[in-house]
Length: 73
Image (tube, helix red, strand yellow):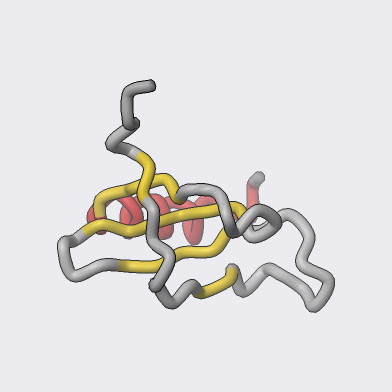
């Protein structure tokens, strides 16, 4: 099986859970950043699975869009 370069194994990373996540978890994502300029994004319900790699710029752009448009979702 070919390795997907958009996915990362980040076992020693410090993950931050979405501020929208309640105590019970729910449908949330966790994110970590690496000095290489890559953000790792994963499902908080499946932390053992590999994370999706997103450029730091791409992640920042997504967050800016979400802040501007999120209320409409």
